[in-house]
Length: 357
Image 1 (spheres, helix red, strand yellow):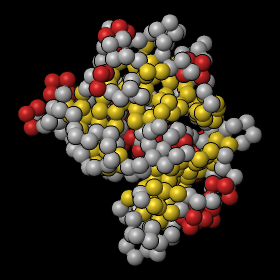
Image 2 (cartoon, rainbow, N blue to C red):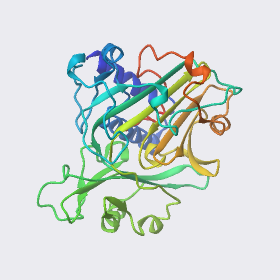
Image 3 (tube, rainbow, N blue to C red):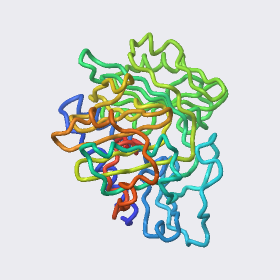
Image 4 (cartoon, one colour):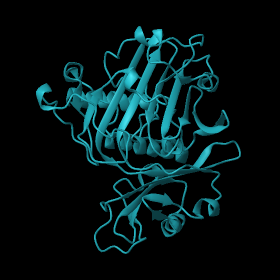
């Protein structure tokens, strides 16, 4: 296994480390959710597996594509060193690279930090930009039990070119994906009338209910609408559709008492959730509480943040104090980059793992 693959493995392990194993169906559902998050990270390059070439050349190829394979670092002279045109703009396929950038080059909504007089210190800070092929848009919905714990979860991806669905399949016919049935989850896709496909990763729904989803879902101008299906399923939480994208800004900050990870990401917090997480209120908006030490929330449209804190600190209390920070904040000037990028505790960096932020 290469250095880059090992770094990716370490990242994904760290991303799910705070999820305590649970017995029975709940445990299988959470394991299936971790698979979903890991797969999603892999599709977009996971956690910027930067090698020494990144520090020297300012850029290094990342993992990308539906079936990612490690890409060998390119010579510094053969790759662009400037930020790509259209980063963060409407989706257009771009080379799969991780770009080293400065904190000043991050969007203000991504460059977040706790206050200077807060309970956390800053030891490391790492801004990044990842580009690659277009990742499909997504829309997440969740249902909870009487205690606010997620017991039903569905994330719809697309529209995208038909891949999982064989040619000639009738529109709306559910076709199992490669991970359908693993850990009790459903991974199915279906064709739209125009030949593109939608795909859903779901937990807690019957085959009949997913067939109703396929019948209800429509796409207008690239935007997925689930119609009356969420209401019919009595789902309390419905996210906003996040459009396809090919450039992702990320921001990792860590210190002795905890870590913060922020990234541009479509679809809101439900796509970063697992069955068994708890939905709570944070500043008047839904947030996802995982265990007692991690919270995931959306501080701005198409931005996801994840905060992990040490025992004795309340992640919700700390998250409520997190906000934009100046690029020349003295704490950032004194912070170094991680010695081994990808090992920083990431909460929303989840391609099917944990919100690294």
